[in-house]
Length: 220
Image 1 (cartoon, rainbow, N blue to C red):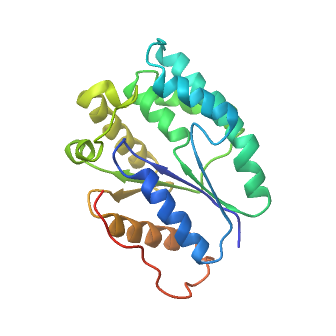
Image 2 (image 1 turned 90 degrees about the vertical axis):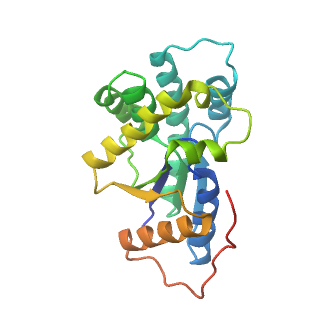
């Protein structure tokens, strides 16, 4: 079985973090060696950059500076975590990757999607996910799920979030073979089941399940 690189994408409140855990647990139940990570993060450098980007709101950041900070964290993530895992034959499942920059800073932030794609190719050394799982959700439902203090990007309001959702739709339309939309408005178990179905359809060399191991359903 070949090593694979999967990423979960979507606006905040779409359930990426919860579904990453479920997807990784399901893959492990099939005997797959799985490494999970988040972008930015998962390395010492990435966590430091993440803190600046999301939680140091007293530090002004232009869109270009914001983009390059994400790229720096991603470059370290690729070299320190993702490439070594893939080289040993593991699957990698990441909470966000380059598509987030393309949508957040490129499309919603006004830098231009193509420019961010080009810069991202350098930052990642050309590494691309084998499959991008876009958890699509309407703004009202996403807002209901985020009952917590909002970070820098989450605080930019509904107009910005709508640009993000539109940006994801535009990228999925432009690359339907790589980006798969999954309805994230339904229950956690339903989303997880759909993700498993998509992954099985994309990678036919996955082992058969030893038995049904569905996680309990729950509210978001």
